[in-house]
Length: 597
Image (cartoon, rainbow, N blue to C red; front, side):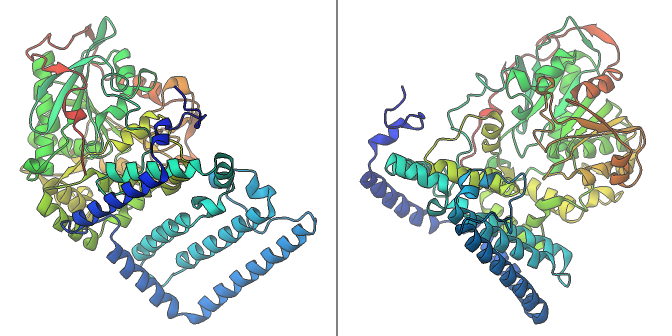
């Protein structure tokens, strides 16, 4: 039933809570937050102390070159003067060209009032001039350490995007119209949403990107039929039911990241990579990682390798009587797969016949914007925080990833949820994005230090896992390396570096879009496209210059590549046909475990 006071159907139950009720509720919540803060260690991402010291260093470098600062300030004053002249002429009815315009892909200023109304147009242009000046000022600090300048530029961008006039109800024309038309109901509903998000985050604001009840695992998401056929402390192994009379002889093992949950590969039937792979005749097995608690704090990267893909290979042989598989690793799951393959090569284990890597870093020399959060100071704070709890709360990881796309994943929802008073629409990928997981303390520390900070994987023998020195050159199986062009987590040029480190025959494919949408790109969408090339020069841009663009999804290209390595066809096999007795229906218990923090 749609509430009469809320024609859009956005939270009709909000009418039961008056402003007085909301204020009383906020006071209770504030008291609870203060009590909780007294027992917490104050850890947050980002850390205010680190940012403060960083900006103090930036200010010191600016002060060391006063002439350059004065020149920059003079340019800004000149721009302000041009803007004032333009606004004056426009108010007189003259047709004038704007001094500053938003980027074509900047959706914040799409409302017509930002251009048609002189006042809002002036506010917009004043903001654009000021924000671009500030960003340029930091970017131009050539005398600053490059890593420090990169961090300073990142946090400067966070600041200027937070201060956008679109984020305040008094300077957002769309919000002002809604406020007048509804008599302030949008702000009351927004305050209700704000308090809901604070309560859901136990005193930490967790902005809802989609409705928490929009989907249910096993009912509307992750519904590809299958069974959990094996489990241990760290993972459940799911085997999916066949949809074809015959299948490739070699099973397909998928190793997803444990930073998020596996069902990004099995969202809904129309965009499920797992369902599509089953339909291509693969016997698909997927590792579903547990959402770890303090009891698993001691688990290391070695344990994830031994109890994850290596144990999964043993289980798959029992389930299918096949000792040779093809494997896929996604993101950090791909990093784990690469380590596993190097370890297997060192001990003479040949059970993996080919490997596919989705948006996977093994060379962390240029990790992109995630590198902002990874240095000695950041990791030391993180380790101190995890030492007491035994894990890193999922909310902290979610905050990091959301900050990489702050306008899309933070500020647009601040406007929608809190200023407009709407509930966010149901969106499967964002539901998955909000379903965060914890990180065991020992594993996360080793991963950040040895890989991100010290970049050991690309130095043969520098990384030592499960009793072997890791040398990626020992990986001689055919590899399919997929990167995505707009990836903000695993930049494609850094992903491309893997072609220099793996042995064997390599196929590099660059897909359009980003870390998630570029991978989850079903045929029916007919979006983005992808690039391929026969040669792999050292320079990734040289590869792109010689690459051929193809329309649509890269999935059929991979199907052709993997099909050639399927080992022939055999009758389809179902969960329970072999030596493993099914434990429960997919998607299993582990993926349904929620992270409270």
